Length: 318
Image 1: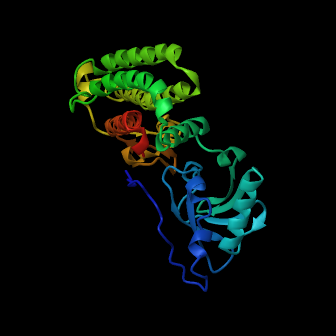
Image 2 (image 1 turned 90 degrees about the vertical axis):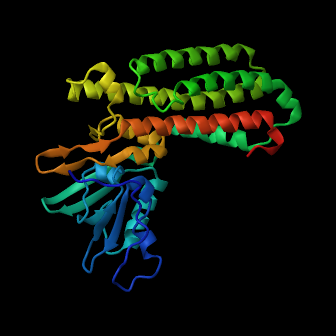
Image 3 (image 1 turned 180 degrees about the horizontal axis):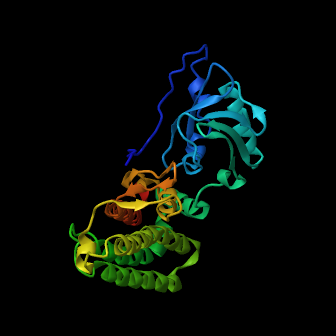
């Protein structure tokens, strides 16, 4: 099976034409969103030079070597034309239609308007709000109000953190059940603190806590999905063995794996290879769920540390 290492970023394209030094950037317009890097051909069209393994282009079946001939009904003779078409589509929040010449013939690929929307927009906004909050010094007068509330929330999160701190947390029989119970208990504790939150400052602190708690909730979804997939693919494994099984799992483009990666880009490193089209359908990718869990828990711990530092030393928090 073909393996693609992540992150997969194209640092530049060598173009043997009279193009200026800025040509590579023109050929990678909105690469973070569309997920494709191009290079101009001597004749009409732009060749697909590289793909982001989990980008929209790859998910749409575009492959390296395909030639993009048109973008929104405009013939493409250079990368500048492609850049303009993409910029106009994004600015007007309209679909981007590409006509592509492939080994199997010509085909049209449509990137719907939703492609320009931020993935997991609310979650991204919440994370940004938490980051902004922790980077803003806490005035002493406000600290007096929110410190007790914040300390209680951090205490509850620390208890949840300790439940997964052990290197063998994934290997103990019944670990998922205990984790689910611990997470549910922590969620109840945080919900109870809503009643004691005073004013907007208190509500902001708890909103930040909910963002951190979201890391643990996503980890639970990943863990549950892992065990379900193991039951389907390895029914010979007993429950205890399933908890210890850390080999990669197969996944497809319509699996929740990509939803989690979109929500938390740090999870890209848990992807071993991406799904891809083959002659008789879609070939699965490979993904390491245990690595995904470790990444989620590590991110949560770092955010708890930042929140605790902010509450204790507001004038020096970063």
